[in-house]
Length: 135
Image (cartoon, rainbow, N blue to C red; front, side, top):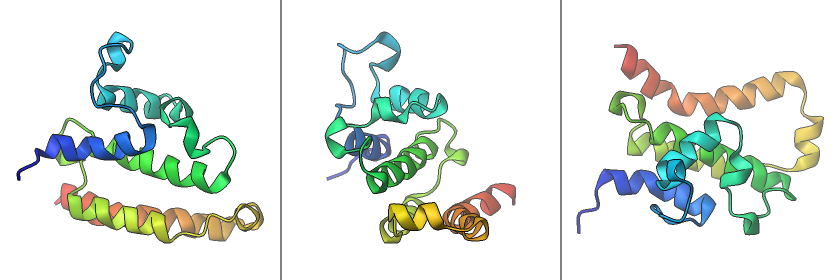
């Protein structure tokens, strides 16, 4: 069975929000879950997108992982296909997100150098994509 790529791009949003892809009962600018997700991420309102049953507000680990997935979904939902990561790159980032240790104490005690390294590791998952865009 063939599934359109546009549907695949919505899966990440559906997973973190538990919302349907289209809902005519939402505000007119948020009928499309894709538009809603893009607006929430751009406006730093990810907490309004996330299903409250996931524990986003109460669990640091969940908040960090869901935020990273939302940011990935944001990149994956871009209209310009040249701005979107490939499915392989999406998988690489999801694997990276999965393997991280999100222990709150560790995050709070992490020295600035290690924080920079963690950001660089996350960004490295997109480096092939970015380099490909420059070539």
